[in-house]
Image (cartoon, rainbow, N blue to C red):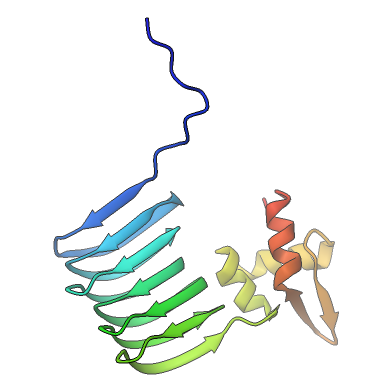
Length: 169
C-alpha cells in the first residue's frame, strides 16, 4: 500500500481554451486560464488570464492579472495588473491597479487606475459584492473605511489586509 506525500504541493490548475465559445464563465478558485480561440460574453476569474496572440475576445472581464497578446474588446477589471504585449489590439474600457503597454501594442479606450483609495463602487467591483453590502459594512464598522462628508472611501492596503485576515464574509 503506497502512502500519499502530504507535503506535495497542490497541482497548478491550468485551462487552455482553443475553441470558439460564447456565454458566461465564472471561476471561483484560482486558475491559470489561456484563451487561444474566440470568446464572447462575460468572464470572471481568479488567477492569471492570458489572451493568446490568435485569440479574438469581446467580453466583460473581471480578473486578477490579465495578459493580452491578441484582440480584445470590452470592459475589463484587472484587480492587480493588465499587460498589453506588443501584438495586442485592445479596444477597452479598463479599471486596473497597474498597466503595462509594450511598444507596438494598440490600445484604444479609457483607463481608470485603481488608486490607493477606492470608492464604494470601486470596492464593490474589487470584492465582487453589491454596493449596498459595502455601505452596510462601512456603516457598521465591519470593514476598514474613512467617511468624508457623505461618502465612504477605502484604502486599498487596509482592504487587502482585511481580506488576508479572513474578515470578509
